[in-house]
Length: 365
Image (cartoon, rainbow, N blue to C red; front, side):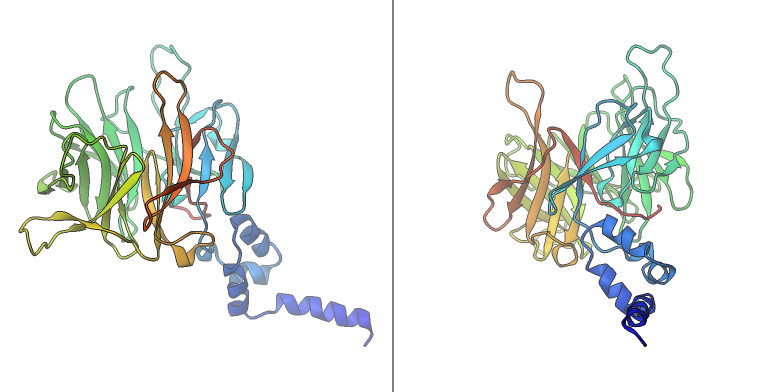
């Protein structure tokens, strides 16, 4: 056997590696594009590394797209300091409403030129920019032309719920729900007309709504619209100006509330069986352990630091707008905060207007 034959034999051996070894190699890949290239080597490598086993990724930052006629979307990977331009053909002539960050999909809506009359029907869909996989949503009968926003929420069992906040000309507000996993149809909940909610969160069939004026959290059943319970505000003085107020679910299933005043964050855990109080309450905590919270203008999510490359534990990563009086437009900052010290630090970002976090994946909802 000559040297050339030995090399050929060695090359064939790479394709015959045990699946468990290939899977270990794949889990060491830090970027989703490396994972795709790894699977493209041969059939054996692809079959040993299913899409469901994608290594945990550090979330990307999505840049605001000015022209809906441009099919390219730009993302930035902080740990690798890389900018990706991804052609998403199905985003053509659509506005990006918001990014349901932890699911890898974005909301899109057909773009309508300013001044168009009559207003055409608004077609909303979920789009994965990496796979170009699109999920058209059924038309919501409660949505007027001037609706506010859509959001994708998910509970711990994997149930996806589309929430549409309808704000018509009257003082009456409506929340409409669409369950992707089973019904795939809409139903609505009537909200108190004198309450303006800031954040919503879905968990085990319950909708958590934070009153932006009082800080009170109302918990409503999405099945019948009945009020389950009310959680008092954890904030002693409502005169404090809240810059951020977000509800998330951590890796242990706890519901956390993150509030921000100026440069300081406070984190609270929902205690539904309080020993000192018969009613549920928010309990302030000083650490989230081996976890990191990602927050943007649309919401947030939690990742385990030991499962994702480059993520620091016990931290908050935030994308927020920063407005200066008499100065337009707003500026957007990407920051990370060590919860133990409380000091924010700027996170490198080449975008002037980062929109949201996006956790890249190849999954289908």
